[in-house]
Figure 1: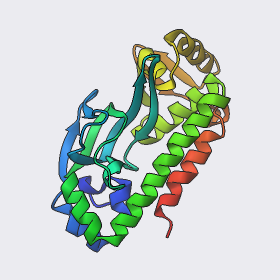
Figure 2: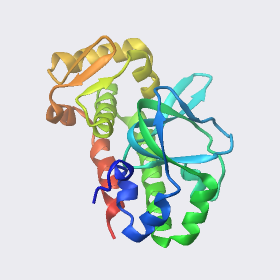
Figure 3: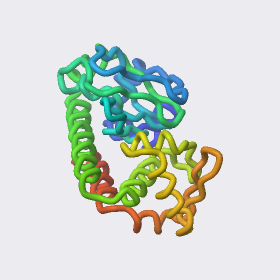
Length: 233
């Protein structure tokens, strides 16, 4: 059941009403400006973010370049190491698509986890979903073509943005997929010629969602099922 602007996060919506009400007064609605750094790698996490709109990306940066290893939209929360009794993460997290989030201090989340078995169980299941996402991405990057991977990434972003228009530069998409920009130019051109997307001036429009799903590898469906299981008893 939706609970208004402070209830547009799927995880929070999945909580029993009593558990949600105990947590509600501690939540602060904050803006997520484009490019905002949420966490730096290996720096203590002071707050967690239940995303209401927009997207947070988690990326690993190495000498060879940067690649996305996880993504969080309104289905989830950034700061899952707190749930796992850690206080930092080895990756950087930043705002990929601007939006809003409900922010909670790490200490308050720890206290809420002690008070609410339902919250503890839900976030533990979400931690598993994030692990599944990272593991599937590794397999996808190794085994599937760039066109399949690009289609999967666009579908995942489309789900979370809930708009057919995605603000997206080719340089950024190349970083998320771990390839060079010319390769993305070729793939985006192929998807555009096939009538699935249009791409101009830093904006990508999804024209044919069904065809894009057909162009994606099986990884997209696998990741969707993993998220859909979050609300199961």
